[in-house]
Length: 127
Image (spheres, rainbow, N blue to C red):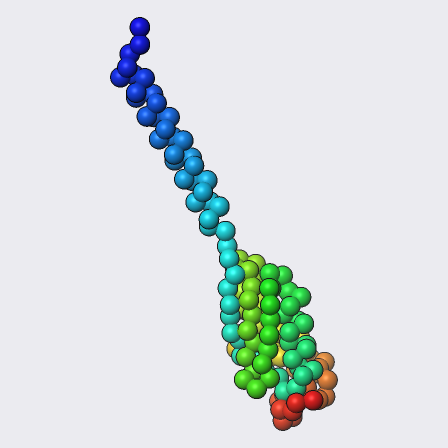
């Protein structure tokens, strides 16, 4: 003999559990961290600076793209959220000798860049 009410209750309970599991799984997949764009002011005066700035950032963990504009001195960086931060990018740039809005280069690090790149004493030039 079949108790229809008990069977209905059992089926509904299992359907609800299956729905909760499915929604939880789908929500977890949809919350993957994406990419973020940041604009960072970075001191520099020439194409050699541009190469150094972009190479320093492009080789860092989590970076998708990095492009520095000589005229505006703005570095546009696209990076993976959770892999790096603008502060970490700024610290790497300072270590490469370039002052920026997040960190200042030490005199030792600044001294390592080429003479034509000495943005504290030279004028901006397109070479």
